[in-house]
Length: 90
Image 1 (cartoon, one colour):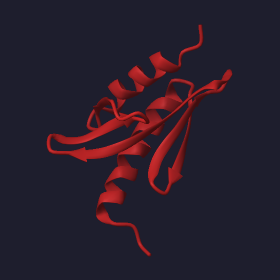
Image 2 (spheres, helix red, strand yellow):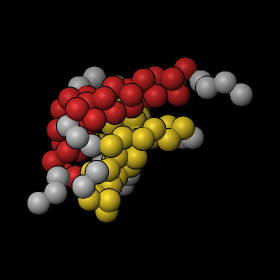
Image 3 (cartoon, one colour):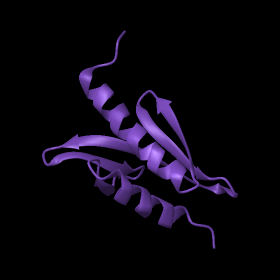
Image 4 (cartoon, helix red, strand yellow):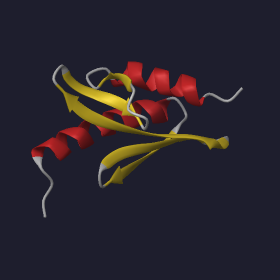
């Protein structure tokens, strides 16, 4: 079965976020069904989170695993900064 246009859009935005996260030294692995990123800090295996991308009435948004919005999918750099801050090792 082929992916729907919605899944293609979600995967596209998650790919852009993965690139931004990797530039910040984090590991981002794309899970395919449903599309989501498993993000971790390479120096702290317990510092990990899953982020997905959802279409809402205002546009596409990145979303934490518990449903809270991270930020607009049109601004993956800002979302990556927020995620990196949460996963930062102290």
